[in-house]
Amino acid sequence: MKIGSVEIDHYPLLLAPMEDITDRSFRQMCKMFGADILYTEFVASEALIRNIDKTIKKLAIDDHERPVGIQIYGHRIDAMVEAAKIAEAANPDLIDINFGCPVNKIANRGAGAGMLKDIPKMIEMTKAIVNAVKLPVTVKTRLAWDNESTTVDRFAEELQDTGIKALTIHGRTRNQLYKGTSDWTLIGKVKNNPRMHIPIIGNGDVTTGEIAQEMINRYGIDAIMIGRGTIGKPWIFKEIAHYLKTGLNLPELTIEEKVNIAVVHFHKSLEIKEGKKRFYEMRRHFSLYFKGLENFKAVRLNLLTSEDEQEILDILNYIKITYA
Image 1 (cartoon, rainbow, N blue to C red):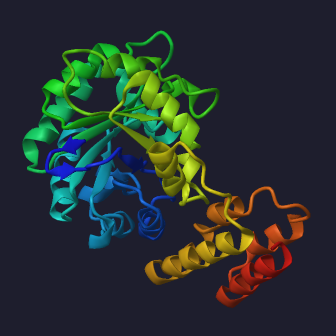
Image 2 (image 1 turned 30 degrees about the horizontal axis):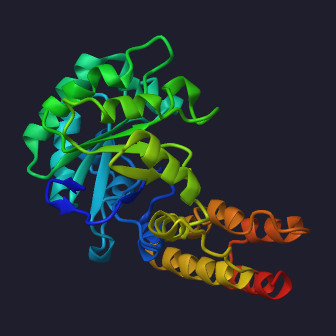
């Protein structure tokens, strides 16, 4: 698969952009386990052009993450164009436009998936951004706003005509949020449209190698993007890649292996972040690193409430010893 100058010589697995998840520490963990293209947390255009420090920090990229894309969102075309230029100056490999985030505070303002209610504006915005930057521009969107709205198969060609280099489609409408089951039928319809020539990337509910292989076989998509399935499980990329290559599942990681990975992830968070955020943003990962352990409630509570580095490391060591 080729996106501009970015070329992957095997079947590509991409890390989806997720707010408060795909920071540098987690991106590095996913790269360690074979993620082919990484995306930053999505970046608000209005905050970026106002030089808000918290937002500017999201643009930080380490060279060993590459290829990596910065994803931006917003509802004003001029602000999005300016934000794209600022993001380009941070030297990513790709600029991605978020037309898929379903949360109310974003979508109800006309940004993210809110743009699905105004397809002409979506096309105008995309074209303006493509024309404003030299880097490859990609788009991530959903099937539609709701079941009565214009669906992605009806505007995918228009997006392609703006000059974007790839299109990622999440298999839900905005109104579904993350409920129900992802429907890849329209993703396949876009991919199999003979007039589409850019890579079509499928996203939604891929959590195992078997599911990934089924989606590839059924719909012929060029790559798979994985989102929530990576949280607390960055090794999912290695598992799926192994299955796609061999048709076999890797053995389940031991508790010791999971603890060792969690410790590395925690240390990366400590290196990159400041203050209590170093602990807060690890909690969702910690919770899922050890999902399913029996008699774990009290240990889990301690792990997810501690704000002390050594105490957290001691708890992780306790998990390794006790649950091995």
